[in-house]
Image 1 (cartoon, rainbow, N blue to C red):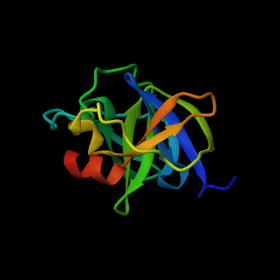
Image 2: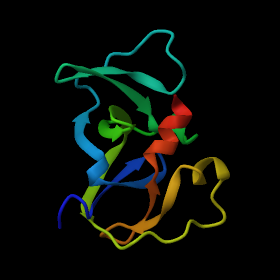
Image 3: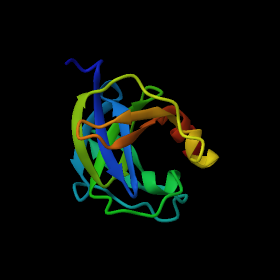
Length: 140
C-alpha cells in the first residue's frame, strides 16, 4: 500500500469519516500549541505554529453541523496549496479501501455536499469520504 492508495479513517462527533492520505500532512494532539483567536468567526478553533508556518484550525464538527465530540486531535490537511487543521475526535485506522460507493439518500444535503461517497473501514464500519476542498471553501 502506498500513500496514493491509503485512506485515513477517523471519527468526528457521531460520524466516521475518511480522507486520502495524500491530502493529509500529519496528526497532532489537540493540546499541542493550539492558540484560540478572540473574535474569530464561528468554526475557527484557533491557530498553531507548524514548523514556522501559521496554520488555521477549524472545528470539523461545526463545519459539518454535527454535535461536538471530544476534539482530541488535529488532522493537518493540504488544501489549495495551504495547510489547514481540522479538529477531530480520533484517528481510527490507515488502510487501503475499495472505491467509494454512492451516498445514501437519507443524508442531509448540508452534509452530502462535502462528501464524495461511502467507504468501509477495515473493521466493517461505514465511513463518509470527505471532500476537503468543498468543506474549506464553505469555511472561508
